[in-house]
Image 1 (tube, helix red, strand yellow):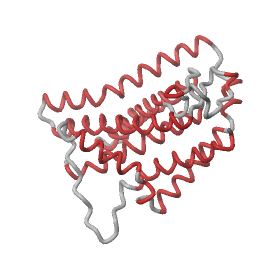
Image 2 (cartoon, rainbow, N blue to C red; image 1 turned 135 degrees about the vertical axis):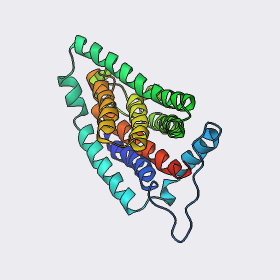
Image 3 (spheres, one colour; image 1 turned 180 degrees about the horizontal axis):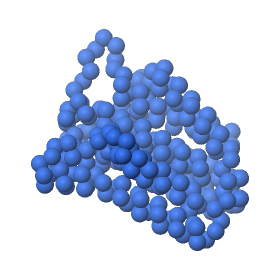
Length: 252
């Protein structure tokens, strides 16, 4: 099973890297298509277009995207090699685990609710930027979770609390409860990426990415995921959040 891990990581990395490469690249000698406006009415159509762009990565990935995919594979494989050692020898205090789980739920809840807050406040105050940020952040979360569920079905990885934290892949009966990748990290980083891109500043980046990092760290400390699960989940969320923002910003 371990021999299949690099291949699985490569597939994930190609999807993620392609989402990033599509934020800046267009087909040669062809005008870039006008992105669909980030409005509630356009969300269903935009989601379909997003997913088509993400999953048709072989036709779009350039050299930059391929390089970033290789970097992610190397990083995730390196972290994954230490997954079992880390989980067997650390984060075993019940009180710490409980506090970490509480923190991860709270931080994820804040970033998951952020799209609703931005849209609601923007609508109340007639602020188009805030409204569109809310729509894009919500769309990024849905896009990232859709990709994550496919990864989970394919990977079927056991949780750290199972079988002495061996973290075996492709186990029958795991299904959507696969540890690989972390949905909490995906939600947090996809929302944070859109907000940070829309309101780019040092303080904004520190706040939202700090919260997203807190989610990723506490998912490991709380023994819900292996380190490689949150690394890949964070990368998927961040890349897709950036992709959604760049795809739609021209229509703002």
